[in-house]
Length: 248
Length: 320
Ligand SMILES: Nc1ncnc2c1ncn2[C@@H]1O[C@H](COP(=O)(O)OP(=O)(O)OP(=O)(O)O)[C@@H](O)[C@H]1O
Ligand SMILES: [Mg+2]
Image (tube, rainbow over all chains, first blue to last red; front, side, top):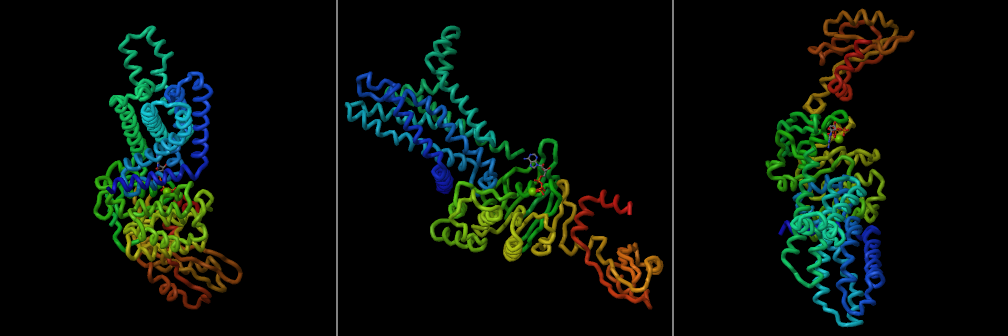
């Protein structure tokens, strides 16, 4: 009860902070432009001649998020440490966990909002034909979970440094690894010299592999657990890093 | 209310705080003095639960800051050094946030915000972004945040830093007033503040407590305490030195100024005679034309220097 009201207070402040700076609007506009452009122009939506959103729309999300999500997450703790407000935050009667979760949820909700704002694309598809809307919804769920996984990684890279740029670069690199591990050209390269089991291990770390299920309309527990455990692990790492800084 | 025992903090090879013990009760205002890097802020950060101690314990209202951090933090209002505040919020939004996270809601929240806005004179900037505030106003905003829940314990790290003289005065008065019902600990580099608001003073140096007492007790440790300064007309310095030197209670004489019309002398007492030097001098100097005579009170700045840099002070005195 108390826990939730603390988390809510933190999250509310954090969300308000997004919208009080141009960052939120710039992010949303860029995300929507990218989605529209890639779906209809590059993704070959019209050439396919079918009213399906799954491949042309969602296929690009792991790549959009690679740059956009770290841009959203980089300030979470780095800014807090640079300005010194972390000293206020962590001497309030709340636990570090409540602060971490509150901040994470705020950014995740923000990413969710950006995702929801792509609804005109869904409407267009529905206007042009009759797509499988169940597939679309499961794609959205998967995309949001994937964004959360990226975000949690930015969250902990942000706790590592006072400099937002460093945080951004490190989290892009980590997220890039999570994508490439399941990127078909990379897999083909791996299959050339590695044992099949090793290829399996590597691809099992990939967000692409796990996002694929959602695009097929399969809500597999293993995929959900995969994203959930990235989030859990990264947030836990964040708390360890924050404790480490304070212990000196 | 605040109890600190053998508190220590080690950063790498550096002992920033090295076995500090003291306690502050309700109704006390403790002034925390010490040179730069002495460990004042580090001690305060441990009391407020921001950094964990390397050794020793700190408790607030009976709650250990490590074992029961939430209960302890509830009782404390904290103004960190440099008064950080969320730059992306307005003053009003920031104070509302502070009130909410302290568990205030609805009417109580509104009242609390209103109260601190008035106490800290923030009406004129209430809807301004924290980012564009002047340093003094930002300081006041952060100070307002620390008292928003009317805490029983206040920890203030240089609360008057960056304030104009009027505001400094206001804050000192405020601290003094609040100190009647709360336990307050504040650090400062301005020694006048000690007299203006403290009931007790602790001086720390290189992580250790080197003095602990009331401002008067500390002042009494000054070499100046009880010294008598007098101006005598129609006398040379040498004659004055000669005659005053014969008084058994006198430890040391210095000539402050000498000109054809007379001489100003400062006479330092032996420790046993601090209170009576003026009388003794009066008796021993019949026939002198004394134009001025007063007993010095002892000066905190000199005590501070003596305590925190004994080597340099002694070296200079020897040269003289
Ligand atoms: N996070 C940290 N890592 C390493 N050393 C630190 C850290 N924080 C403080 N120190 C060191 O601990 C010592 C005490 O610092 P502290 O900030 O407590 O001093 P202070 O008494 O508040 O000084 P000032 O009057 O300048 O504010 C300093 O030597 C400082 O360099
Ligand atoms: Mg300090």
